[in-house]
Length: 91
Image 1 (cartoon, rainbow, N blue to C red):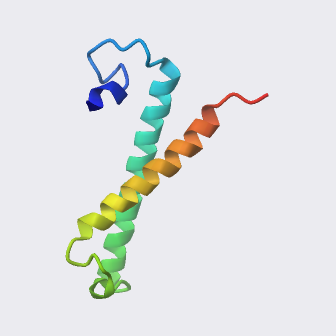
Image 2: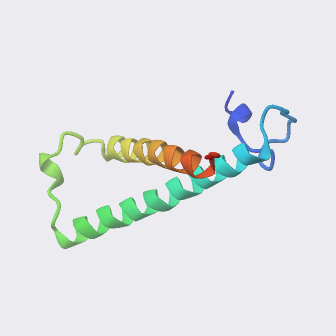
């Protein structure tokens, strides 16, 4: 199911509805999301090491993965809108 959304460079099947512009957009969205996720993880580690964050007060302290998944989804959506706007044609 997810193979239809992957760029031609990653996907072995031939999908004629997926053009080069869409593959560039998708690769840039994934790469920006990855970079900002790494930044968020480094910030979380630094806050935990310095003692500035108190995770016991948060609702997802038992499952911090939920917070990271939410961060990744939000970053993906923000990057998708920003990069699609960047590649869109304006007169």
